[in-house]
Image (cartoon, rainbow, N blue to C red; front, side):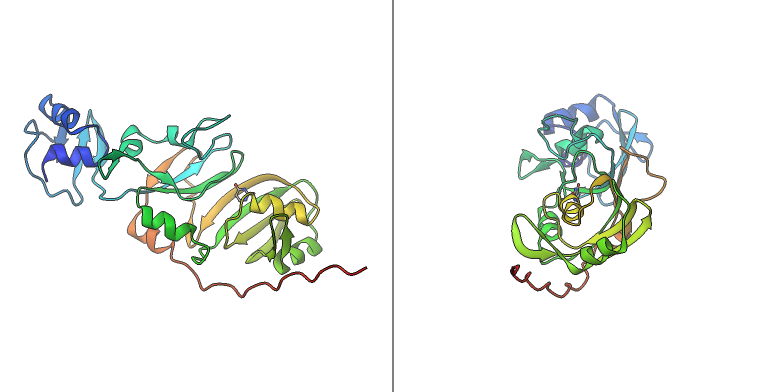
Length: 255
Ligand code: URA
């Protein structure tokens, strides 16, 4: 693939801008400056620098971000800065079918939720991960306003009814981890699900952190706001588990 085409595919600007970057000596490959924009390289695993910044070729981009509090998972945020401002420009400008598309968050976290967020420009991956049939467990560390009691844990495991659906939702796993803390595992991703489930058992979420998706754990050395590429092992860790048994609909209340 021509070097200008490689840069274009990775989000470094229009084909013309990319050719200019090479011709003006801003690009090195394997440590050597390259000024011929049409020189061919095998893109697989290619390491290069643009303006001194190291980069590596990825046909599709899969990333994890440690989402900080006070950021919105929206391209057009209403109140807080967008998570997309935490990513370098090429990741936000990767082209798809000729248009600037960039990576997209796989599902959303609330502005005050922290932790593991996936991003990609692979539409099929987003679709698969968000599909209700695709049961990838997500683990949340929850800080609560009121002390957690065993009855609340039991109810979260049995299933609680939220206001938009008569079918109960239940935690795939739930354990008390402190006086006002619990670890909750969900296999669905309903709007504000953790907050609404805790409200349904008469408690309240004070802090919320996603620590894990499938077998992929947010690395302890990633500080809030940091991102990194997912490896093949990371992607393998995101495989779904068998669907949990359905929860019976709640019986109507009798007087
Ligand atoms: N559940 C919530 O209530 N908020 C999140 O951000 C994620 C899950």
